[in-house]
Image (cartoon, rainbow, N blue to C red; front, side):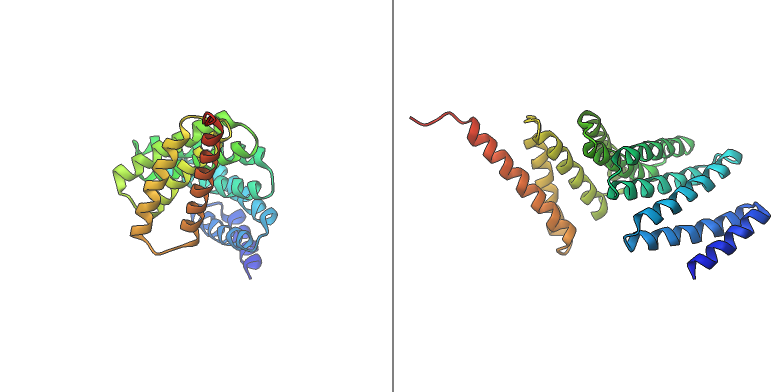
Length: 237
């Protein structure tokens, strides 16, 4: 069904080359990409996101609008997530960097609209994860910190939603995981920030698999820190 709808909307777009038929094609293509991604068909979903990237790029060549930049950025973030799951961390990093650039451009077009702060934070978090996977630890650390700053801005401008607190907690844990391997003295500070946020989440929302995952990551890092501290403690005579 989706395949037939996609073929029809693509044919209409090729015939009329207008915004209305582009929107129809993008809507069906987005639906198909999400279906494929949910089914675990990341290769096929990546092809859809690449096509969305192409369509938005063509539209932007004629009209460089913020909503088109946002659409292309979202396609690139989703494409990058597919690449991460397929083990292509370098390609994922390239896509996330492009998405960050698009969100920055959209943010500037709308004079610093807070709407894009959270989108930038998400793209930067994904970029940091892909850089961590490819061993670019310094870049991952820098982009993780930048993601936290954008999330702080989003919270300041738009409020502390559960989703934003979840993302902030994930960012602090991600930074702690990166820095823990380097015995960085900042790790305890990031863990304490994550602990406070997890405590807040426990009070404000029902139990969830995401919250359980955050708690397990925190516990694992706290255990790692405790082991390291015991190694550095002087022996007792």
